[in-house]
Amino acid sequence: MANKPKISQIIVVEGKDDTINLKRFYDVETYETRGSAISEEDLERIERLHDLRGVIVFTDPDYNGERIRKKIMQAVPSVQHAFLRQDEAVPKSKTKGRSLGVEHASFHDLEKALSGVTVPFEEEDVFDITQSDLIRLGLVLAEDSRKRREFLGETLRIGYCNGKNLLKRLKLFGMTLEEVESVMEGYRA
Image (tube, rainbow, N blue to C red; front, side):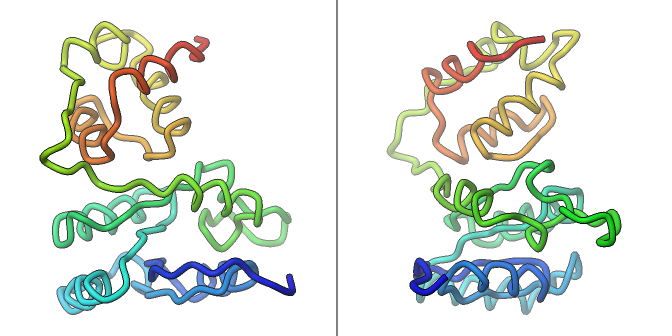
């Protein structure tokens, strides 16, 4: 790519292979957490980078990636987030093994994830989703609630979370009841 799109924020990734893949397609600076071993020093640096240039957390769609994302969200609640679906983060060749990550994503999938960057919910915004709405939409307390939450998380590109944390995740990303209802209209069991 001759003229790579520029991303002004720092993208937090897990490792150098993630950085290499992003730099193939974008003019971008990254901060690598070196896998799931994120330290207090890392969190302090990420906070400083966020204050200077803004930060987008772009971790792998797996347990360790979610763990890193949660630690960063607790330390720096106002960071932005980009999400890959699991099927977008698998190796395209058989020789790459079974790893799952940003390092395997195509330009098309990276572009979708980064165009869907979400900004945390601001307190002055009106959050209109209730636990009753989640029950009504079958996202909790239904036989297929897990599948419904997986569908919702993938479609909204906010990642999967369990029923206990769904309301918090929707609020964190400033989702509206109208957006959630619209997505769930497309759910097919």
